[in-house]
Length: 319
Picture: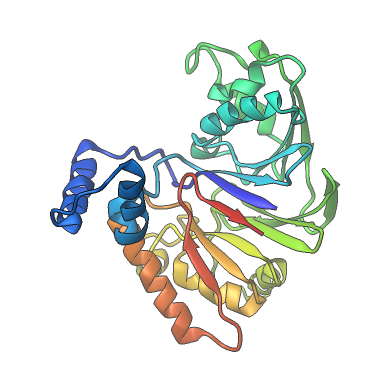
């Protein structure tokens, strides 16, 4: 399994600004301290090895979209935020290499930031492409049609040439899809959301975003621990700080990095990807939150350590 992050922001896309780019350039020049580079390759190596990520890179600005690439056969996609657009462009290249023109798309929920990329998904306009939509909601087709009504978008859903199917998945049951065992869990979020666990060839991948966790419902929380059990990677909604998640932003449907660590430790998960980043947080702030979460993990660690990474547009993780 290869996990590709095409969009990692929550609520809305967050493009990097010219002011932020200038800050990165200034930071890189200060770090170089007059150093000269023989060629572009040497300069790139300096960026990769000598610069902190907030200076040499960016966590990106597209909203939620994750691909689980099995290396062959059908595509598996989780949510259709603005990150779906670059995924679609890359899929055209893979079509040319003989990849199947079938997408299995798993929806956490139908809020706009998770469906907004679909009108710009190029494969949806190509005859012979098949789009299989899965989710806990029975209104996926309705939500997509409403988004592309004339008052909102010039191209209606019926103008798309791909064949589309819509399947409601029952939480608590295991479904066989694309050669994988797919589990579904209902999550606490406005109008509900759904998390997914995908197992194949001894590997387990969990996608759990837009989910708020409340300590007073211990039975429900144990259900999530069981759902995450021994996962090779858990993608977890860490949109807020712990303080925000339990005070002024309580019941907003999101969680924190510290809660994610607690769940993953209890479940014996191997890796945690912080996800659904707050639009107000710049690269420096996200990097600081990553460091704080990693330090918390060290303090709370038992017999088994948990690898923590902060999801970024373009990041690939092999399981």
